[in-house]
Amino acid sequence: MPDATSWSFRWLAVAVAAAATVAGVVEALAGAIDGPAVVAEVAERGEQRQVTDHQRPTTTPYALPVADTARAAWAASHAAYPATDIFVGCGATLVSPVHGTVLEVRRVDAYDPAVDDPATRGGRSVSILGDDGVRYYLAHFDEIVAGPEPGAIVELGEVLGTMGDSGRTSACHLHFSISPPCPGPEWSVRRGVVWPYPYLDAWRDGEQLSPAAQVEQWSRDHPTACADALADP
Image (cartoon, rainbow, N blue to C red; front, side, top):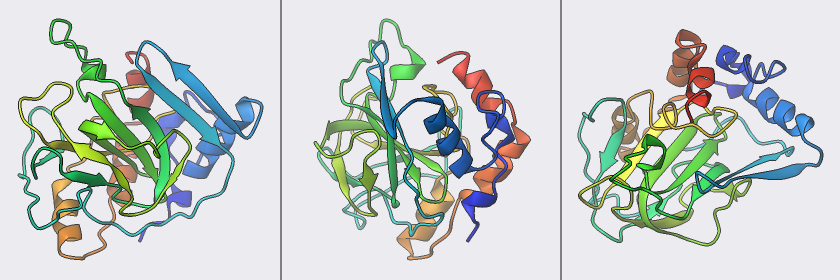
């Protein structure tokens, strides 16, 4: 399994010059702000972000992000960009697919169809930085439980909330995406950059297939992706 501490993450050099690895990103951001844990409110987005200085492992086991794995269904396609929509049913329990740290929580559905802001299309959502250094984005929640907050540690299978249709969607489902983390609020990378369905297929079969290497390669191929996304948050 790839070691996330070996990633070079060149796309972060624009925003965080000292960040040569996933651990470096956290250390550089934490060092730039006094205190071991700082929460920055982003009022216009209804988001929070927290940076912590604790050390985390660099690998994680994987599982489906839904509790009812037998009923979960998805397709090998998605409109416009790589992501996977998982269907179980309204109110289905959603869980963390990895051990990791919560990056962002959006508990208020701020989506307005008259505006159709891409940043709010996910409705209620949670972003997790896996211990493998990969960001996992889960969107369209009906409700998010009280526990997940920016900076909180989550474990594989920990309940995050329930499946819903918040944001821009016409049916209850989970929008699930995989991407590298960016050092600030943005939507165009977070929404998904590599296809999740091969990993979901593997995890359902009990295979511990990691997306870390593919995400690392995507980051190398798109060194300015985060900087571009942060310019249009």
